[in-house]
Amino acid sequence: MRAGVRAGLGEHVDLVGEADDVGPAVELVVERRPDVVLLDVHLPSGSGADVVRLVGDRSPGTRFLALSVSDAPEDVIAVIRAGARGYVTKAISGPDLHDAVVRVAGGDAVFSPRLAGFVLDAYAADPGPSSPPPDQPGLDALSPREREVLRLIARGYTYKEVARELAISVKTVESHVSAVLRKLQLSTRHQLSRWAAERRLA
Image 1 (tube, rainbow, N blue to C red):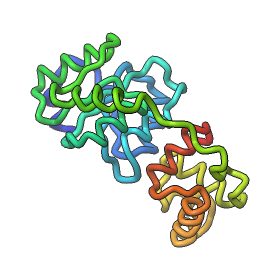
Image 2: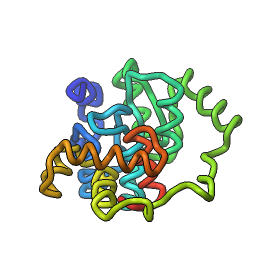
Image 3: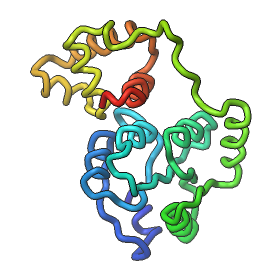
Image 4: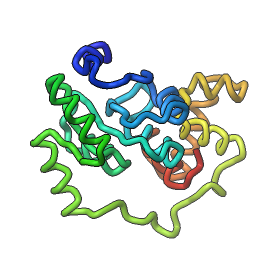
């Protein structure tokens, strides 16, 4: 897929790097600070929205444009709410993709026509995520090791990378993540990454 994107853009843009997962993508964006990041929505250990949140303000001049096969409303809304400036599908032509990159670099918001309606409808119905309830459990519910695991997962580490970093087994990492999800009343790893990003724990 990335080879197809490179061919479609041709020599019209300067490609400064590629990454295939959340952690490497965040590191690359922070290190090279590109003008625009073309971002897939689904990555092996997380989502494009996770990348946007985890980069945060560490690359303030970078804008994100989602490029995905998915046109599901929940995918569109999630990455836009995270901070992406646009969303186009992989059916887009090379010239149109180049135009989208240039427009996002210039500050415009760019959407494939059908997807723009999802965003407008979502923001009309719900202008933003609500504040967590006051009794929602926080970090004080977690053990020191669970907090370590949480921070690494929020940075985009895979379970294997967390296990190597903390010198524990992958199964132990899985147990810690399950415990963290239960204590924080969350259901998925994506929700966990978002919870941590909102509290700047990454």
